Length: 120
Image (cartoon, rainbow, N blue to C red):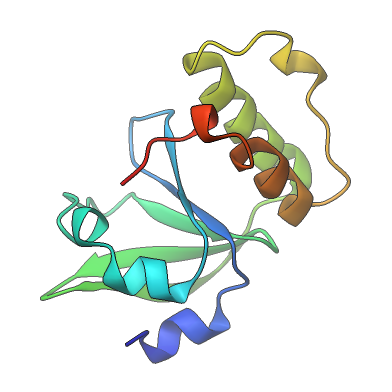
């Protein structure tokens, strides 16, 4: 069952792991709470979940992963920069031309193609 903190998240979202340009796409609260591979991921203090509004949530782990809202928000250009790095590391070309009108549409357009993200 999703925690109360996941209710403040605008899904879909991405997880940005510290020192890794690959992003993890999370479609909804059920996937966040119920994906065994995600729940077993080694989480560091600098890891973050960025939701469709650009809101940043820190990730903590006791028994399961939990989200803690922060006061930070990433702008659309900041999210596009993360997505460009992700796409570039996955071998996509022309990533400098990537543009989206919103954070939500940026996430959806990049992760609509299964070759752009690692299945958990």
